[in-house]
Length: 303
Image (cartoon, rainbow, N blue to C red; front, side, top):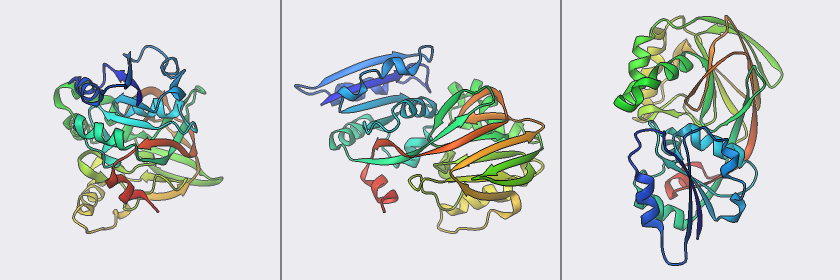
């Protein structure tokens, strides 16, 4: 097999697991090309010959994987997300193993599924891809404030940030969902492709990242405490109970979404906290990403 590995050296805890993966994968006749980034070079520079390889391996956090997936959109080239970030939410949503040798077996099996990609257009006109979710408001504040603590605290940095930002900005929203105007208010808006976040918590009950539609969630509370009933309801989902998320969430489904917030709110996509504010526009790229997946993923999302 021919493997192209894109390794983000500054992602997550930098434990070197990708090198264990390469050693375990390599057999007589294989070709493994490793290209290293620290985020400085445009990701397109690493993918100019991607079609020459059997699999592209994206080693890094969710933002790294999404950036590579976006550049490879609609190419049908298999992409293996290698979980080398802090939260690695995409791998969790895909039911993928995290151990290098298990990922080698998954690569060799080369079972694939096509998934949707979201494209976000920011206020400055720049475009980015995301696989999990994008949003504005409370979630973006959490992502931004967690950045410094991720190396030391890992996933707990997000919860530390959440508990220190109990009074997020409250804004009025004008949201277009497939041409329909929604007037609402709250502390944030999420546009969801994959719904599972940290610690196996799912923002919504049912999620299908292969149906060509986003779930659009408005966080309607005036402070973080108002989200607690929805948070505990999400925890109960894991036990097989599926309680209502209470009045904290307002949910829509759409292929195209635009968000205006007054006052403007911080924006994030797949955990990338950026120095941009609303407004933004998002559109669906259906079945644009071909991912290498596990049997558990196929069972969860087939049909």
